[in-house]
Length: 126
Image (cartoon, rainbow, N blue to C red; front, side, top):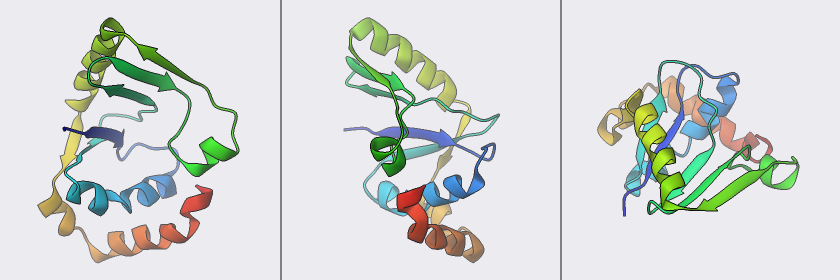
């Protein structure tokens, strides 16, 4: 099974949210997830495509606040044609992302690691 995830890169409206998300990169990389950070500008897409058939598009963030507190909406579609279009756009965006390689990720500065760990305390509220 191949899992690829594209997340916001350096252009983000809330840097602390990016730092908090990066706190789990170690776990994801260890499981074989391919992580990419979008580079050219801010990206706010919330899409999911599984096996080229099932897709999800909406406003829901995959976090506790969205699931428990906010009024969010997501459209789930079972359609090869729709999944194909969504995958095509994802591939286009992925090409503009930078892949996070586990070896390079392990060599990031200590200050980055400390900031990521500090956000763990507030993760539930982000």
